[in-house]
Image 1 (spheres, rainbow, N blue to C red):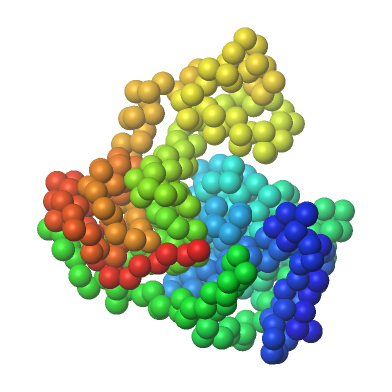
Image 2 (image 1 turned 60 degrees about the vertical axis):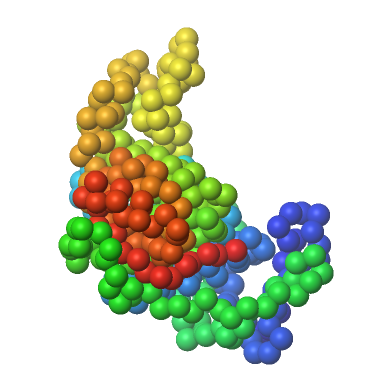
Length: 390
């Protein structure tokens, strides 16, 4: 089959809609459901991302996509008890692939709500069991165990989209798209991202541990499939903050840094002890937790509104407690898809635990950026490789 009709395009009024190949069969099979235009954009970007993550790390990988940018991406490292708790996977058997998915979905659960999932490996029943509980539009993987497929087909009253991709498929070297009736053509972004990019370290601190080199690679690979401008914070094999599609790089850095801060604040003992009402659903718990750790709780605690969520009024996490806890967030790796034009990015990133940075370099203010890194003790590499994605 070299063509698939879609219900509509980006919006319901955009008809007709389809995907097709001029030569050769489509590289996917729809095993269940009916994917939409945006679903497939997410699926194809996500599949490329997890394939490259696995190739770079040797570990199973997962990504959670929303509107053609990842909300989360990770490789399959074990989870400690705290992460199991904040990712809502206590008591579940976690294979390496299930761990990758739990991390990709769990880091920014607000953004991952209603996502499209990408897996690097054949989906096993353990991973499917986690997916079955979450609000999600669909999944793409190179295959599915029989039990996993049965579980996934039961989601959304049988309408959950399940796509199998041919792992041997390789796209053409040229990419084309039409915008405003004009044809665009470019070479596919097939740049290989590996530690060979880390040879140029212009900062005084030139020590980057192996685990942080891995995290820098994860950040860069994630950025390769994130709408630009974009910045990605990574710790322990998973993205903990992604700032995508911003016009200003400092806004990318702030957005991703704020997400990384909230990820870490969710692990605060006071947050873990929040007295949620029995039976309160995970999405509501996630939403309320996000508001609580943000520090902007006026609406949450207005009148008796807190009674909708808690059995008793929780003590607020004040600014001093937040600052003290965030001081423990360290050794975060950061990737940027283009150079930092000002040193303010370094100082904002440092405030969210960044100690290792990979960016292309090439700004007329590189010297100021290097000096900012040196003043903070940050090790930074110049990759000389821009990763814009549009």
